[in-house]
Amino acid sequence: MGFEKKNIIIAVIICGAAMILPIFFRDSRYYMNILNFSGIFIILTYSLNLIHGYLGLISIGHAGFFAIGAYITAGLTMGTTLNFFPSLLIASTAAALAGILLGFPATRIGGHYFVLITLAFGEIVRLIILNWKEVTNGTNGLNNIPPPSLGSWIFASRFSYYYLVLFFILVTMLLTLSLRRSKYGRSMLSLKASELAATVMGVNPLTTKLINFGMAGLFAGLAGGLYASYIGSISPEAFSVDLSIEVLVMTLVGGSGTLLGPIIGTTFLVVLKEWLRFLREYYMILYGAGIVFVMIFMPYGIMGLVKRVSSQLKS
Amino acid sequence: MIQEIVAGFSMGCIYALAGFGFVLVYNAVGAVNFAHGELVMFGGYFGYAFSTHLGIPLWLAFATSLLAMAILGILFNQVAYLPIRNRPVSTVIIASIGMSILLRNSALAIWGPDPLKLNSFLGDGAINIGGIVFLRHQLLIFAVTAFVFTGQSLFFSRTAIGRKLQATAQDQEAAKLMGIKVTRMINLTFILAALLATIAGFLVAPLWFLDPEVGLAIIVKAFIAIVIGGFGSIPGLVVGGIFLGLTEVLVASHLTSEYKDVISFFILITVLMVMPQGFFGEKIAEKV
Image (cartoon, one colour):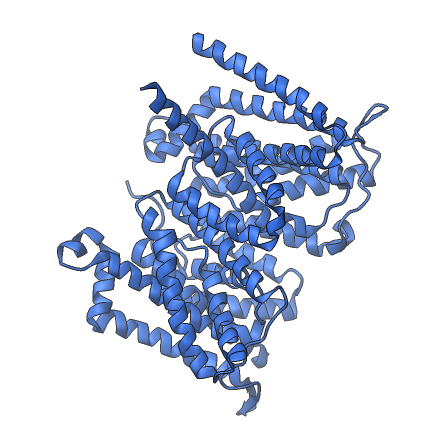
């Protein structure tokens, strides 16, 4: 019980800090932009956190879900009379369906075979939005996507957008937490540990994996919709395999399968990229070397490092 | 039609050659090297740098590139594979993705984003044989493919070092007990993969030009070829590569050129779902 209380206090402190944080940066469009991008990517990272952290599978096709969310939200808000929120809901549902579709192969194959499936999925989505010019406007992409509105209130400023993103981060976290605590969350972790043993014990791999992938698709679709209406214009090159790999790295650097890992990993990498901007193209060389470094020296990410240090301090 | 088949066949041979180094490493140590495409690209870039910047003849540039790539292969192994070889497969996969980003952006920093052309050993001309026009470079591709794939079967079955490599691939513990130096064999595997990447790079560069994205483009095609043929199978790789090359050309000219890659990716997914062992490959379902 004491443990529970401590966790609730930590959660309240972090929430409070997140509420107050932008007040200090309110006048800086630059810092508000970094905060909002971090927020959107945090939601996307929570999506991969489900697949890698809870099932142990690697996806390098997450840009696909993100693109589905972005293009459908943009298309509905621009082309129909639908408001932002119903459009976002439809777009996220579509991404969730795509997730479920990708969940089926995950029940039959794993390891590097599954990595190739996700690569193919992401590329298929990108090639379709690149070539289906009548709908997606091809390489030029969709421009002048309206900002979200709720009644007469429009989320036009970066400051107000922050709270919209924060709201969806909290929704994502609560869904992740309740999934983790449910029967299905435990089933996922048992499948990750040993699929055979879990199946023998009565875990249904199909249902469990489809729930996981559906939810992961939903999160990534949400992130995509928020992204599209935040930056106002989207084009296919933003949704390449590079984006998928960036999300994978954010997940791993933070610490996959933990509740705070996605927040830490994403913020760390977004801020690092800004901080090292003066390195220009050399940043990406360093980034690649950094991935190898993390895999060799801290395979459980920053959260793993924190846990190791704190358990050493205790003993 | 016959011209299309020649073009598809030669492209398929390149996919098979580009995938060969990848399959070699996979068979020998079970590592999935997502950076192999970048090794192919570097092979081509080294050839360009030596022949253009140093102005030495192409064959000498090829020899120097082989040497440089062998060193790169050892470095790759020492940095991104050996330290983590006992970790889960996913760790090795992600480290290789890191290496692919590192190599791709190094190429961007050194050679810039513009496409560069590497000359072919046989030049740009074409030859008419019995009414069918072959590019001289296509004939080179056929010859090299035939040489490499017959050569490898002799190398692995007839030479001492080839047999040692096979023994290491089958059971590292047993190989160690037989007195084979396993770490040395792993190094050698990565050297061989890098040499094969150089050959593939010299063949693909005159056709596709060299830019920092070409490595990713070629390895994705090689993956599809490998999956069609069956993961780990060398005859399967050749058949899968040629199948993909022909499909691409025929789809592009008779069905749709915009969506030809989408169709290739659908083939990848379908094969993995319906017959994951491909034409010739290993069974991938987990044994109880």
